[in-house]
Image (tube, rainbow, N blue to C red; front, side, top):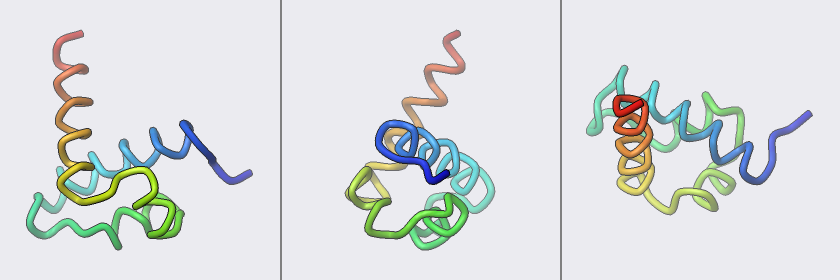
Amino acid sequence: MAKRGAELREHILWVGKEVFLEMGFERASMDVVASRASTSKRSLYAHYESKEKLFLAVIDLVRGLFLQ
């Protein structure tokens, strides 16, 4: 079953984390994130309007994990 809404947003966030860790910010692309998240770029941009916004969300995620 396809992920939707908040579930898809969280899935994209975790995939984005892996892509940024693997490729770095400059080399990472929204195309790669969308492909690995098994979603369309349209859905990706509906949740995160830019690579920078996704990166900031990933930073918040990692910071939260670190503080736990």
